[in-house]
Image 1 (cartoon, rainbow, N blue to C red):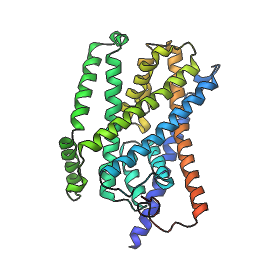
Image 2: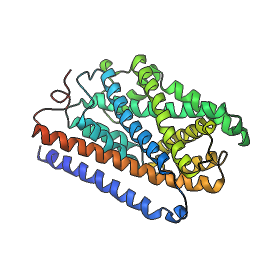
Image 3: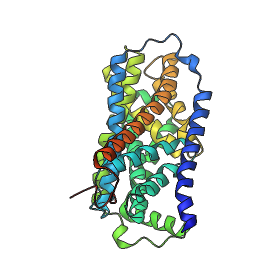
Image 4: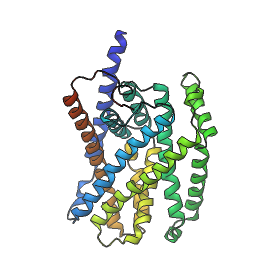
Length: 326
């Protein structure tokens, strides 16, 4: 028991230390001279911020929806779990996708949510997010004739991505993959009450389709702020470009926050609809903007939790039971 008491603060300290280290590394290696002499329309940045923060809160809502679909019916979206999701989302800046997933499992379990349901639900939410972003962006880009300027192999790769993503989210396939992961981690097998049904997947996929629009709109407004001549008719292409880059960055487990991968895809695709020099500024600006939005989301989550604690006093129950009434 003594070792466990030491383990909790150690995990939290290690998480924040690694996060701070990789954020500093990124900031130091950012070419800030890219932003010299650029004009920005602040009106579109306000819209970009609304879309970006809205997407992050929407993600949290989807995660809660998935947990409830798995049987955690007492779980509600509250200050505690918003804060959990916000700081876990920052875990993407630590190399590997695991800190993002494991952060949700570990920190939410401290509020009384079942670890087994968190494990399945967090993996499912992350998988659906990546799959929906890949599928929606690939479909939109394949339907756009401007993609013909790229080698045909790109189109074949996108079709393969769509097929693999859909297959992976079929309940029998997903449950099989989760069961294998549990066995590899030497965890108890996937029990029947933790298996995912089609209704949970379909609802979350539908919700993330809306989220994909919100996330992509943030990029569109950023590019519009930097390049006012960008036409509204290019919105779907820019949205798809941003979502494809975002999904690929989450799959790039070797890069903290997908650094390099996201920028490469965005630069390639945005260069089709805007001048190359503006596209270069946009991808660097988008990365810095994304970090700022993630930190703002974390700050809002921490602030909301602090306000709740001041109003209610010391917490007396778990998140799953007392803080989220039916």
